[in-house]
Image (cartoon, rainbow, N blue to C red; front, side, top):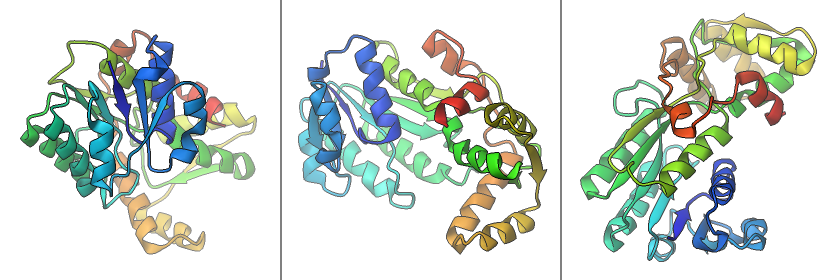
Length: 284
């Protein structure tokens, strides 16, 4: 069985490969797809096949997909370009009749107001239209996304956000990577859409408490209005596009876009998801 992992040099991709090998997959049957193969030399040293996968170059994608029994399409990091890039992989998978395509989507992608949802929704629709046997992994937020906030809080004692009392059902990247490895290697998942999140949905007071424990100093959460948050981000030197993205995301969180968790991730893993404090400590 040959498994292609796209985006293999990214944080999630590397962890997926780690999880596949930990589950007993022969490294020589894993294809690590990377835009820059030189960045995957460590994977090659472990016996993993390294192939060039550039979402902007359909020929590289077609060659990498050919002969694969399962393909993990890790969503592109280029927000705004994802739909066209993902379509390249979908088209290649359809052309060669890939038996299983696994896609890392976003929570409630087809119905959510989450700022990142539209590109994921379009990709899910493209996969369905192609008629490819697929598994959709709708990943909630990575705990590691807040590592930089906690690192700053070690100096300032403050985590400021405009998320109100919104909750985030985050889990560690390792948890989501292991779930991907499970569905790539097990039968019985085709056609499933899994809403994946941590066992506990925390709010930003909880995040501040976790930061206090991890950093060893008191950290408090300072709730801001959207306008106050935008002003603070502008003062920090962020551009208008980034400010709009960050404040919209916090508004999504405030409205509950990342709050739902039903235990699906822990059931796939066969264990509890990584607690917030442990995830942050490992990330730092």
